[in-house]
Image (cartoon, rainbow, N blue to C red; front, side, top):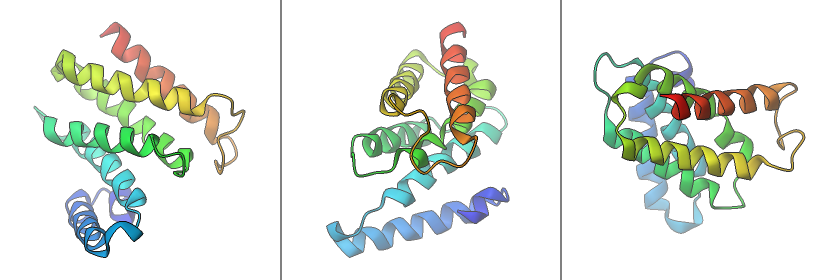
Length: 148
């Protein structure tokens, strides 16, 4: 995860893939929540920075991972919400290259995130001031999709 934060995306991806492989070997008693969450963030970050076309398969995987993680009430929503600024940045950079199906997938994910965050003045376990920043990023991403 720290490799992603310093833009060493190639090594970050290698480490996450290794971690996911180990989690699969450990079986159902091991939760891959954090690995899948971080992989989704990595895919949005990586594909936002790619010159030209992005990897549609990776973005779809990220959407599916986050959507599935949102469906499990045991997962802490703050971690999933932290992907929203990366989704917004991806949309800002690549919206013109997204087909209608991909846009619909991202829109559906953002709607799930918004619904999951409703009822909270402050998202559980969020840092001070983080919730309004994440909600603003969510709003911006939705607007980008609506007016693109």
